[in-house]
Length: 162
Image 1 (tube, rainbow, N blue to C red):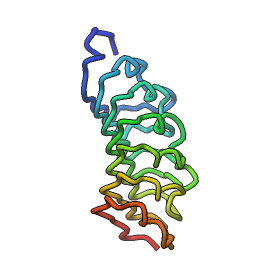
Image 2 (image 1 turned 180 degrees about the vertical axis):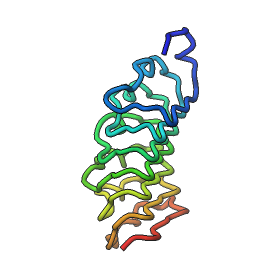
Image 3 (image 1 turned 45 degrees about the horizontal axis):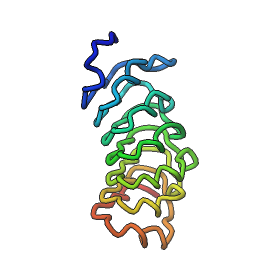
C-alpha cells in the first residue's frame, strides 16, 4: 500500500477478505491515525495486529470470521472504541483480557459464535455496554452478580448456549 499522503485523513477502511495470515498485515495502517472504523472480517488473522495500537481514534472494529483465540495485545489501548464485533472466531474466555472491559466508551460487544465456556472475567466492569451478544457459545452458568453494574445494558443475547 503506497503512502499517498492522505492516509492520516482516512476515516474508515474495509479490508474484508484480504489475506493477513503470516504477518501480512499492511504497515501503512500505522499512518491511518484518524481512522474511526475498521473492518477486518475474513482476513485469516490469528492475533490482534500490533499496528492497531496506533489507531487511537478507532471507534468501530469488526474482526468477524477470523481465527482469533485470544484478544491480548493492542485492543485494550483503544480508548475511543465503542463497537467491537468478534463473532465467528475461536475466542476462549481465558483469551480475553479483563482490561478490555475498562474501555469506558465500549457500548456494543459481540462475542457470539466463539468458544466461551464461561462469562469472561471482568465483564461486570463494562459499565457502558448497551448491547451484549454472547450467543452460540458453550456458557453453562452466569454469575448472579454479573449484571449489577451493567445498568445501561438494553440488549442481551444468551441464546444457544449450554
